Image (cartoon, rainbow, N blue to C red; front, side, top):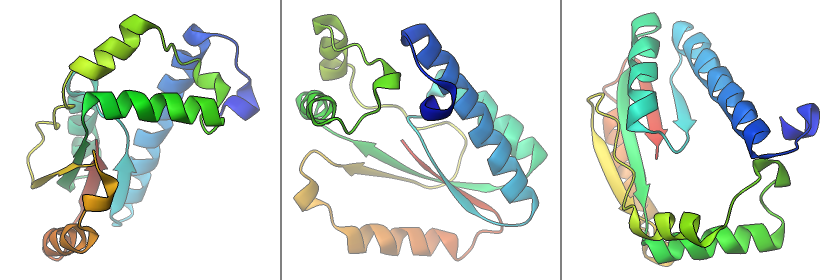
Amino acid sequence: MFDGLGWSDRAWSRQVGATAITIIYHTAATILSSGQSLIMESNFRVDLDTTRMQNLHAKAPFRPVQIRCVADGEVLVERILRRLASGQRHPGHCDDVSPTDLATVRTRGPIEPLPIGGPLLTIDTTIPEQIDLSTILAWVKTHLEYAGYVILTLS
């Protein structure tokens, strides 16, 4: 979206981000209404996305299945700095890597899962080599077999 709409400062970045979230929820409603399952991926926030998910469920009922990824705060800071240094993150995000913001990432703890029901799997991604993908896949398959509509959220 930044490539199409342009970018300038953090306020504009937030506005584009809010538009992107609106598009994600609209697209999810369209897909779910057609009888299909889907995967949504975002840093979902309890204070904002709980109501959004409830509204989505009212429009197009689904069975939520959440996968929540967590990692050590120091590792998250290292990943942020590495992504920025490598150019892998679009400059339109206007990330603020001030000491205060980085300290928040280090100490805020894991993002809480959305209180929308359904099964929840929490995966510690601090050491990627220790992630057992076959166990995760088996868990997902177990929960998808019994779902009419499924939404898989990654936090």
